[in-house]
Image (cartoon, rainbow, N blue to C red; front, side, top):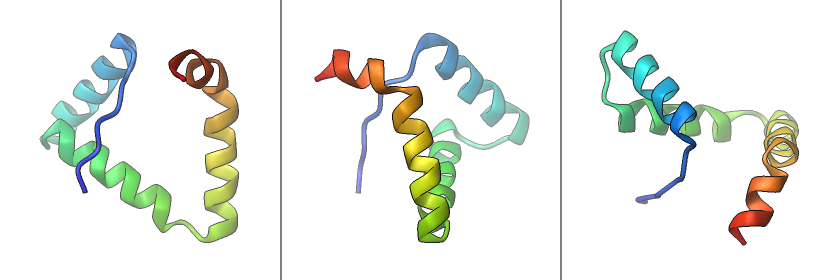
Length: 64
């Protein structure tokens, strides 16, 4: 599945820096992070997802 996401300029730079440090493509690092997140046991995934939703609630509301 192909997925497009929006990052703030700061988030983009952080992702690019992390990918550079690890010597991997940005897309591979992002995909690995998502795979790790969804591979968590369901209770841990739900906690992580809830935390992300709360943290970014204002952004999601502006995008909708």
